[in-house]
Amino acid sequence: MRAMGMDRLDGRNANQMRPLTCSRNLLHRAHGSARWSQGDTIVLAAVYGPKAGTRKGDDPEKASIEVIWKPKTGQIGKQEKEYEMILKRTLQSICLLTSHPNTTTSVIVQVVGDDGSLLPCAINASCAALVDAGIPLKHLAVAICCGLSETGSVILDPTKVEEQKMQAFMHLVFPNSPLAVLPEGSSSKHDEPFEHGIITSVTHGAMPERGYFNCLDRGRAASAAISEFLRRSLQKDGS
Image 1 (cartoon, rainbow, N blue to C red):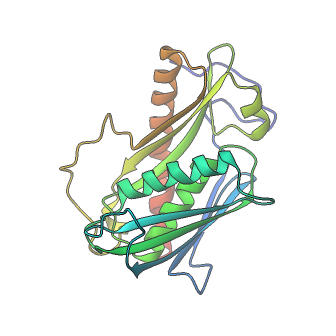
Image 2 (image 1 turned 30 degrees about the vertical axis):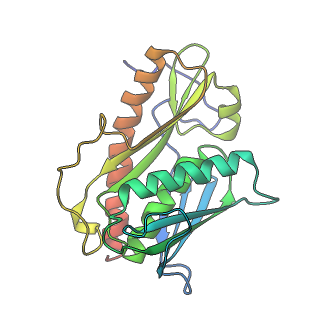
Image 3 (image 1 turned 60 degrees about the vertical axis):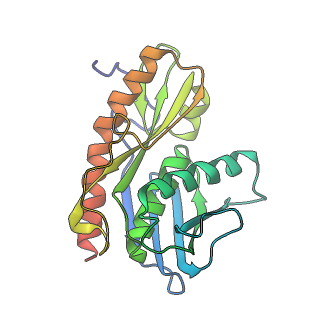
């Protein structure tokens, strides 16, 4: 399905993402760090660990992932707690948890700017920071937000203003395996089947089935471009 013409305030067409930037190894005390921006949405992710021991209730035979979300201003609220949980589950699914059993790796996400599509930006930043820290991964993950308008057309990487006007929007995370940039000890196997090639799918608002599959198709196509950007960015930094 071809993208329907939508006038966007920043001049993009429906299929266009905002400019991406990624820089790593910014925080000297962290084991790994990355700053990821999509337009004016900017997230700084820091990785500490693995440290000995797991949190209460976690399996000591596996590594534990801890996510701490820090908003730009104010206290953490219900929305941020939800983002923490989704981010933790996403990172658990891409990390090789058997490589460092009975350890905890902490990922601290600091929101620098929020102009929409915040959770995907945080996932992309966290993934780049894990690579920077040398944490063994099964594969990389790339995230994208797709918005569904009242007329049923899909737009990629909506801004804050666009999100507020959307009938619904969807955060999608796809697996990606550029083995050349994965840390040593990472998996090179493709023996774990992905459910339709999706790691995470979170929908906000009422989304009809047709809109869901349109978002999925558009998101998957966009994820290839993000994957290529991430691969180039990580190779350029000489991982």
